[in-house]
Each structure stands twice: as structure tokens, then as C-alpha cells.
Length: 236
Ligand code: SF4
Ligand code: SF4
Image (cartoon, rainbow, N blue to C red; front, side):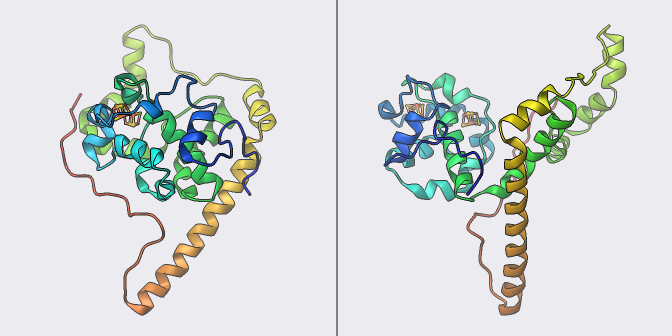
């Protein structure tokens, strides 16, 4: 079992909706039961624009107590911009519900491989006391935003100097961030995640070998990552 499963974060309840409503992650005024399935969340969601991710559908599955949503690739497409939270006419918050669903999935060992991205942030935070965009995110940004963005990034320091801004520096937190991470069990969880990810990868490797042998296709519980549909992103 994952260390430090937090009963306030993902309380044990009979339904997904109850867990979402009781979780500390969602506001007390959460309008989950008042959702009218209007789709304003999906219409305002940048992830929905570029993939077949659909926050309205996630809310529907939660209201129907359809636990298959925990295994869906969908819950991993949100990037917490909170547009849905802002636009919902019923004070519902698909983004915080997604956070609860992700944690529930992880509690059951589902989707741990998705955490590779976040572990990179955690490692950096522990070491430098600051956040960062993981390598995979940078690669995607280079792909989506193009040469001009790459140039801006490369010349960031000199541009800051030109504008009279101080040089970016990493704060010396004197070990305070590490102490917080230690006290809250982060490092123990990190160890658990890494072992689980490794286990899944080995399982996947073995499965791929078997599939190759039998010359037939299959999947590993998750839909494969969707192809980028090629809609051009704006260029800065
Ligand atoms: S915007 Fe709010 S009310 Fe409309 S579908 Fe989304 S969660 Fe439901
Ligand atoms: S927070 Fe997530 S679900 Fe909400 S609009 Fe942004 S990407 Fe979409």
C-alpha cells in the first residue's frame, strides 16, 4: 500500500462523488450535484481543444459512480489551468475532482507511470527548493511553440539584464524545503512510486515480449497516448 495515504485527501466513501465532495482538495461549496452537463467546462478547457479529453464527461462518470474513470487515460490530460473552475455556472470544479481521481487511482497503483513527469519536479524541489518544467514538458513546448520560443528561452538571461531585471537564482532554502518534504513523507512516497514504476515497466517489457512472440496486439490497462492532432498552437 502506498505510504501516507491521506484520509482527508481521498476519504473512504461509498461513491466517487462522496469522496470528491469530502476531500480536502475540493471546496466545501463544490457544486458537483448541481452539474447540469452544460459542457461549459469542456468548451473552456485547453486540453479538450487539443485532445479528446472531456471534463464534462469526467464529472458525469463521477456522478454515475463509474469507477472505470480511475483507469482512464482522460484523467491525466488536465494541467490545472482552472478555466473550468472559473466558467462553471454551478460552482462545480472538474479540475479539483480530477485531482481527487488521480490520487485515488494512484492509491490503487493505477497510473503511477504518469508520475515520472512529476517526480522530476519533486526531485528538483527537494534539491533546489524551487519548481521547474520537466524535460518532457520543455520538449513539448519546443515542438508546439517553435523556434521563436526556443530563441527566447536561450536568450532569457541577457533579455532579463536588458530589461533591468535581476538574474534568475535558485533560493537557498537552508534545507527547509527538504525538512518539510521529509516530515510530510514525500521521500518515502517517492521511493514507493519509483519501485512501482519500475515494476510496471518490467511487467510491460515482459508483456511486449509475449505479444511479439504471439504476434498479436494488446494493451496494458491504459489507452496509448493520443496522437497530437496537428492543430497549430499560437506562436509567440
Ligand atoms: S460547466 Fe459545470 S455544470 Fe457545466 S458540465 Fe461542466 S461541471 Fe457541469
Ligand atoms: S483545469 Fe484541467 S479540466 Fe479544467 S480547463 Fe484546465 S485543463 Fe481543462
